[in-house]
Amino acid sequence: MQWGGQWDGFTAMEQDVRSLVADPRWTTLPPLARAQAIAQRALVTPDGSRWLFGAHARWYRLDRVDGRWHLSAPPLHPAVRSGARPLAPPAGVPHLLIPSGADFAFDRGSTQAFVGPDVPREVTERVRAVLMAHRGLRRAEFPLAESDFQEVFARDVASTVAAVWGTIMWCAYAPAFDGNEVLLSMFGEFLARPLPGDDWVRWLPAVSLDSLAALYAERMLSGAEEAGLRLAALMAETATALRADTRFRPRADALLSMTEPLLAQPWLDHHALPSGAVRQAWLARCPPHLAGATLPETSPGEHFRHSLYDLVEALGYTAARGLDPRSAAASLLAADVAGLLSGAPSTAEVVTQLYPWMDDELRHGFYVSLADPSHPLRGCWPSEGELPPMLAAPDRGTAAALLGSAYATGLAWCRLTGTAPPPRGFAVSSAVVQCLIHQRDDPLPEPGTGSFPHDPDGTGWLFDNAQR
Image (tube, rainbow, N blue to C red):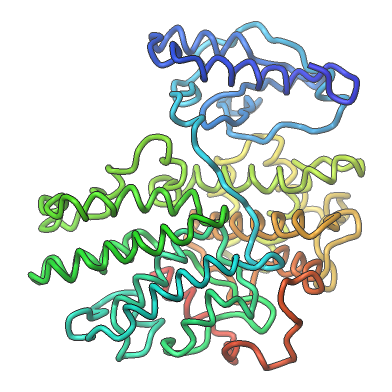
């Protein structure tokens, strides 16, 4: 396979594996035969690194220290890619690296955040119509009860409003929104207090599937089955509206697969309600080709790996500038960890928890960026709130993807380590915003004239609540 006039082993092997998995006979092969087929397409690069293209249609690198295969975005330097050669089939390729077939059908959507490109008007208008149609329902029939949403909404707000909001936040790849985003401002009258962030960006935490399912389960357990099913239908209706935007689509499709069956078979979750296992019942209904969208719920560690992979891909433009996107991503991860923890005693514990989820090369870049102020990778860190010129994105779409993947990675490592995310954004994400301020779809706001007031105390109340 030629890439820029040169042989590109990574592209060739990826296309070969994709052709294999797309063949209808792939799923009929015995597990050992599939493992052998993948192992026969391993690569080795000039530095001795070993690579496989496998499960989830992504690359894996063999760790030279722990001997495990790690999900890891491939190198982009032309010399490395052209120097890659087939490797003698490695023994013992883990079954988790072998494509099932369904995993290659997963649509990853977009990694862009919601700053710069706004949510399309047709999406916001559909969501607004759903919200307005359900805002006036009696709170006695749709109470928030004991839920995370009690901290978000005023006392007289019905759980139908929380169901729409929760669906938006659960489906968003990276819930960093423009301060004037209509999709948020339509909730202004229902909020108990201002959202974290400012007129430029609202840095929001993701809503857990537990929180969404609890709205439905509370009504079902109380005997108000009609209200419970109506909440499930409302989540499905909101997800249907959101899926027109690729930043919502993968998780919107996953949520639809969990909630829509209830509309035709309202008894589906009756077995799970007494034991509090509704979340598990919902996840069990998610088909294999959408399983990737539920990783934050099922495996925070794998979710962190995939988010970091996305960040490396978003930094792909830096390869043409002589940088290694993999090293740059490791350095930016270190910048966020250092910026949030600032040498706190918990820093070492957080770093130790992240190490097992990175290969040795990424671990090294992460470590030296944290430990050595004079290391060249420190040059990737934001300075005075801005990215260094060598990391400046070439266009708005690329900047939005960098913002989304950086923020998603930040939320992922916080979730994995039990760290509360910063209410005013991570250092890297905040710096990327500076590249987008003058490329928004809407007019620049005057200070203090956002759709709803900022969080004056900077308390991060919403993040604190999300960590509980």
